Amino acid sequence: MSWKLVLALALVARPAPVIAQSGNGTTRLTGRVPAAALPAIDSIIATAAAESLPTEPLVQKALEGSAKNIPADRLVNGVRRGLLQLRQARAILTRAVPGQSPPEGHVVAVAAALARGLSGPIVERLLTVAPNEPPGPALHAAADLVAHHFDPDSAADLLVEAHNKGLRGVRLLDVAVAADHELQRPGGRTPSEALAHVRAMLPNVRPGRP
Amino acid sequence: MSPIDPRLQEALDGERDPGDLPADLREAHARLIAATQMLKATPPVSVAWRVMAEIRENPGRVQSDGPARRLIRWLGRPRAFTVRLRPVWTLALAAGLVTVLLLPWSNGGPTPGVAQGIASFVGHFPGARSVEVVGSFNDWSRGTLHLNDDNGDGIWHAKAVLPAGQHEYMFVVDGERWVPDPLAGRYVDDGFGAGQQNSLLIVRPVSSQP
Image (cartoon, rainbow over all chains, first blue to last red; front, side, top):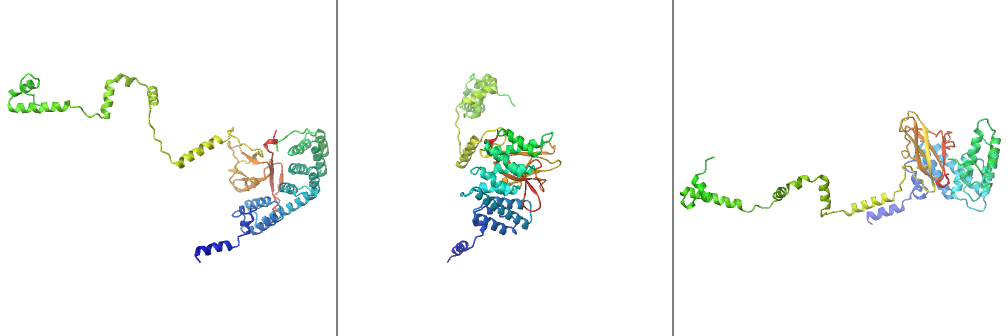
C-alpha cells in the first residue's frame, strides 16, 4: 500500500469536527471565537439546527461577543440565551398561527421583539391580527411604544387599529413615531392622551424616517 | 599653401594642351582630372541627403508650416501600425471596459437595491482619532465601515447601503472604546450579562420610502 493511499484513507476515516460539517455558519466562527468557547457554541448552534431553528442569530451573537472580547463563559451564556429566545419565539408563533411551520424570518423577528422586552402575550396578539404578514415592523412599533413608557396593551390596541385602517409594514413604525411626537409636544400630553390623538388621525400619520 | 603653377592652371582651364606640360606637371594634371571625375560621380542617396535636398528645394514651405498644419498633414497621411497584444491583456482590457459600461452612474452616493435602504450614522465624538461602526450587517468585523470627520468639528458621519430590516450595532471609538449610538433611539440588551446595550437600526427598503 503506497503512502498516498494511506494518507487518503486517513483523511477519509478521520472524524471531521462538527464545525466543518455543520454548514450552519459555524465555519465563520473559527479564528474569531475564542477556542475555549468554540466547542460549546458549536454545540448550541448544532442544537438549533437540529431543531430547525434559525442559526444565523446565534452565529451573529457569537461574533458580536468575540468582537467585544466578552469572556468565554459569558459569551457561551449569551449564545445560549439566544437559543432560548428562538425556541420561545417559535412556540409563540405556533400558538398564534397554528397549523403552519413558521418561517425563519418570523421566528427571528419574534425573538428580537422578546429581546427588546415585549411580553409573550402582546407578541402573540399582534401576530394573530396579521398572521400572514412579516411581523417585524408591528413588533418593533410595539417595542418602540413600550420603550417610551406607553402601556403595552394600549400600544397593541393602537397598532391593531392602525392595521385595521390599512397601515401595513413599516408604516406601522410611523404610528409609534407619531405617538412619541404627541407625547413630547410642548404643553404636555399624557401617554393615553397621545395614543388617543394618534388613534383619531389614523390612518393619516406622517411618513417618517426610521 | 603653395600657389598653383600657371601652366597647370592653363591646362586645367583648357587653354593649353596637357601634352605640352613637363612630365611632373603632366602627372599632377592627370591626378587632378581623376579627382574631378570622382567628385562628379553620383553620391549615395542617404536620408540626410534627401532631407537636405527637400529643404533646399522648398525652403519657404517648410518654414511657414505651423503646428496645426503639420498635425493635420500628419493625421491625413496614411500610416501603418503594428499592434501586438497578449490574449490575457486583451481579455482584461475587455473585462474592464464591460465593467465600466455596466457600472450604474450615480451622483456619488450609495445606491440601494429594492430590498435595501440607506443607513446614516452620525456621532459626536470630539477629539476622537477614529470612529467606526460594527454590527450584525458586517459580521461585527472591524475596519469595514468608518465614519469621517472631514472638517474636524467632532461630528462623525457615514452612509451605507444595508439590507432592509433590523440591525444591531455599536460605534468603536479610537479602536478600543465601544459605545452605543446616542442618536439611535432604539436599544436592546446585548445579552452578555453586563447590562450593555446595542443600538438598533431598522432599515426601510427604498421602495417604502416616501
